[in-house]
Length: 244
Image (tube, rainbow, N blue to C red; front, side):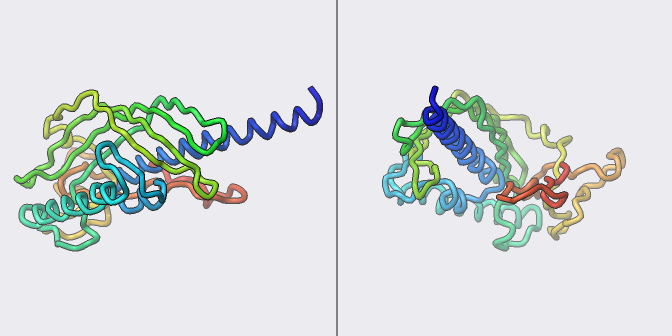
């Protein structure tokens, strides 16, 4: 193999590695933002700017925005009203998402990049635990086992989600008390509906060790921890991810 051939091979392998990394990050980033209920950011950060995007049966940008933004915002506002009625949580924008839990994985990826490196497609398993406030003010959850199929398109040098299809395997409720002994270290509210920034139990539990994270409950709001990593030049202690 000549020097020129070796350089060409190295360039091709580097390009392929970068493609796969960026595609992984687009899907993983979307899952992370789903967990913290940042649906507007999902479209802005990870989806194509084209008009012909699709999310399963939602075809076209307007339909996808209806699903990701207007429909989800409406549901959050409805749940915030329920939280106000039963839990005393104030109806403020920063409290949207109270009680929502969507912990979703993107596992076992299988990705194929087109020869021209302008489009790609991949499939993932996407199991999830989800929970939300019910009409009774209680937390109700379910387990979902799904697969996703995603088409990607390169825009301005970045890989973005173009078409996103969901293939459900099964969905099953989980017992409401499954969250009673869970651990949650996010922002919560006390019994009077006031923000509880110190992450102590809003229902004191004498048997819980001091410093144990807050159980996930109907007053819990999704939050970023750890934050998604950003670009940096060299590692310093400040770049280290927070300990969970």
